[in-house]
Length: 215
Ligand SMILES: C[S@@+](CC[C@H](N)C(=O)[O-])C[C@H]1O[C@@H](n2cnc3c(N)ncnc32)[C@H](O)[C@@H]1O
Image (cartoon, rainbow, N blue to C red; front, side, top):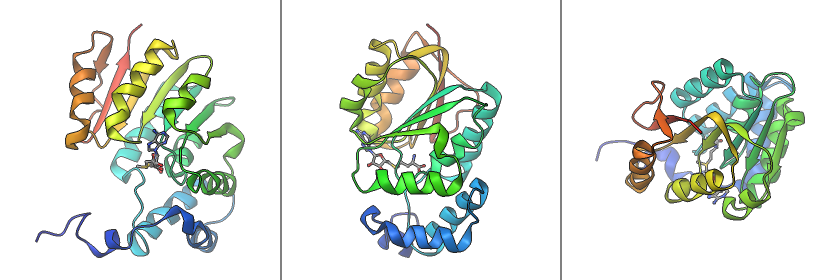
C-alpha cells in the first residue's frame, strides 16, 4: 500500500489531547518562551517525529500567514482550535489591537491551547471559547474580518450560514477553509462557490479554499 498520512507509522501514533503534558514537555524542551515561531517549529517537529497531530499543514499555514499580513485583519475568528497551532500562526501577525477568537469544542484541547498560546506569548490577543460552534456562534457579537474554518467538514456550510444570518461577517471578510478536497467538504465547496456573495480568491489551492464575502 502507498504510504500516506493514514498508513504511516506516525498516524498510528495519533496524538490525543488528553495526553497534553507530552506535547507541553516537548515544546518546553524545543522552543523558548515567547518565541511563537520556535513554538510552531516545535509542534511540527512533535508531529513529524513523535505523535501525529491534525494541525494546519505548513503549505496552508504559509498561505494563512500571507493573508493575515496582507489584509491587516483586526478581528479573526477560527473554528477548530485544537492545540493552538493555527492560533499562534494567526496571532503572531495580528495588527496592534487585533484579536483572535478561537472556538474549540473539546474539553481537553481548550486548556492545552491556552497553555500553548501563553507559552508562545500571544495569549493576550486570543480568546478561546470552549464550545461547539453550533452553540458558540450564537454568543458572538460584532463583525469578523477573517474566518478560518478548520473543524468538522460537514459543518462548514452550517456554521458559515449561521455567521451570515447573524450578520457576523464584515464586508470583504476573507473566509479560509482547510481540507476542502475531502469528500465530506464537497457540499460546502459547491455551496460557497455558487453563492452570489462569495468570490473565490487566487490564494486558493486544491485543499485550502479562500473566498471573500461581499455584503
Ligand atoms: C483539524 S483540528 C484544528 C486544527 C487547528 N486549526 C490547528 O491548525 O492547530 C479540528 C478541531 O476542531 C474541533 N471541532 C470539531 N467540530 C467542532 C465544532 N463543531 N465546534 C468547535 N470545534 C470543533 C475538534 O475538536 C478539533 O480540535
